[in-house]
Every structure is written in structure tokens, then in C-alpha cells.
Length: 198
Image 1 (cartoon, rainbow, N blue to C red):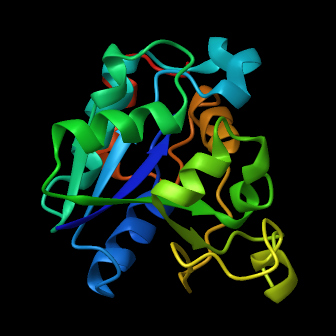
Image 2 (cartoon, rainbow, N blue to C red):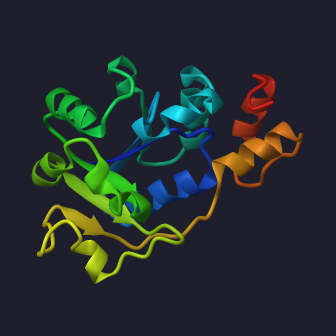
């Protein structure tokens, strides 16, 4: 089975995250998407104090994917060192689920900075990437070839709906007592009940 791995802080998860994952499944690009709530992004160590607790972010993810075909939540990174690196996650996934083929799902912004990732060259040699468009980060032919003179066979650039949604703005709205339109009501109710981002 082809599994898309969509990793992020999900602080909080919003409709754009879920719509993207559902699109990839519906289009047959992957069979399933596993959403991995990262305990701590190595590029966002300085903003760790804005993160809701790990358990709450995982619970919100589970609420968001409930009833959505092909979408699942994974907390596989919880037992890995912090901050964790995606290459380590894929080593563990490969060992634990040898029957599956894993594809990392990243936005165009991350592709343009992929050579800053830990062991990115090993990743490109050993694993698969799916790159989707992000507003403001155009990926033309030149950008597709930025890490080599020829297209890398295990990197796939896909069309997907564009969502310009800021988790920071969502948290600001919540702190101001407003219900953001870009999060699901059941996620918002969880946030209010558990006094998150207040």
C-alpha cells in the first residue's frame, strides 16, 4: 500500500490540512495519508512555547479526520528524540511497516528549502516525496531541478487546491474569543473545553 506521510505541528489542525490529504487520496496519488503530529519541529524550536500539549494536538487531529476515508493519525514520533528529524521517522516506518511504501508530503516552501533538511540527500535516494503547491512558492521547471540537473524519479509534483491559512491567525482569533471559520466545529469545541490558546 502507498502511504502518504503528512507531518506537522497541527497547532491547531485546520480545514486546509484535511482538504489537502483528502484530495491526495481521492485522486489516487496515495492509498492513505497518515497525519503525524510532530512533538517539535527542528525549524521551529524557538516557537515551542506556543505549542498546545502533544496529547491535545493529537486529539484534535483525530477529531478532524474522523469519518474521512483514507486518513489516519499517527503518533509514531512521540518515542523519538526531540527535536526529531524526518529521516529518522522514515527509518522507523520502514522497519515497522515493511509491507508499505511511504511517500513524504511537503509543500513547495519546504521543497525550496529541502537541502536544509537532515540527510536530505539520503532521503532523495531512498524515499519518495510528493510536493504540493503553496501560495507564494511557485515551483516551475527550474525549481523542480534545483537539487540536480535531471528530475529526481522519486519526487512527484502534484496539483492540489491552494489554502492560504495561518495557524497563528487562528490562534489569535481563538485568544480573542472568535471561532475561526477554517477549523472544524468539533475541533473548536475541544479547544474551548480544554482552554487551549486562550
